[in-house]
Length: 338
Image (cartoon, rainbow, N blue to C red):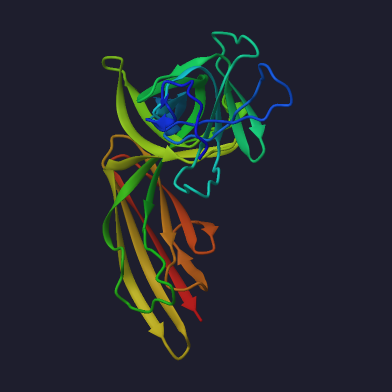
C-alpha cells in the first residue's frame, strides 16, 4: 500500500484512520489535471412498482386497466449521491461476484450540461438490455428509498379476466401406472387478469421486472379496493402480461376418476376423468379447465364431452361456460400407450 501524503483529514503523519482510496498519478506535465473515475459500488439497487386499476366493461370478464409505473431506488452504500445523473439498466445482467443481483444501476455526476428539471426517464434499447436515463439531476441520500415515476400513466388498456381450474399434477419423471388418482377432489379456481403490452392497446413499452398491485373501483363509494398482486418478469413490448389475483370465492371445481383400465401386456392405460365446475355467482362465467396428462408422454384423447385445445405436448384446455348459479361437467377419456 502506498503511504498517502498528508492532505486529507483522514491522514495524519502517514496514519490512515478510516478506509481511504488514494491515487498516485504520474502526469505528463505539472498542473491541474482532469480525470474520469468509474467504479462499481454495492449497496444500491432498484426495482419496479406498478399500480393497476381495473375497470369492468359491459361484462365482468372484460374491461380496461390504468397502469402507473414507478421505480424504487434503495441507497445503502454508505454515501450520499448529490445531484447525480441516474441511469437504470433493466434486464438479467450477469454479475459473477454477486449472482443474486438481477439488475444493474449506473450513476455518475452530471456536469456537462443542464438537464430539464421536469424531464422523466427516457428509454432505449442498450445491448441486450434496456436503459432508462433520468432527464434531470436527483439526490440519493444514504440509507434512503426514493420513488421516481418510470413513465406516464397508461389509460384504458383493454384487459380481460380469466378463471382457470388446473389439475396441478407435477411430472413424476417416468410412466405413472398407479391407479391411485392424484389431484382429485375439490380444487380452487384461480383468477387472473391479462392485457397486451402493445401500442394498439395504449401501452407498448418495455416493462422491467417488479411487483404489480391491482385495485378495482367500488362504485358504491368511489373508493379503490385492493384485489390482488403479483410479480412480473421483464416483459418486452408486444407481449402479454398475466397477473394472478388469487382464487375465486364463488366458483369451485371438483375432479374425479370415473374409470381406470390397464393392460400391461398390450402396454396401454385408459382413464376417464370428470371435472365439474360449480358457479355460485349471480352472473355467467367462463372457466378454462386445464388438464395436464401426466401418466406418459404418448397419449390420445378417445372421447370428450366438448371440444378442447391442445396447449402443449402434455396439456389440454377446455373452455367451459357456466351459467349463473349453475354447474357444468366436462368428461374425457384418454389412452396412454408405450
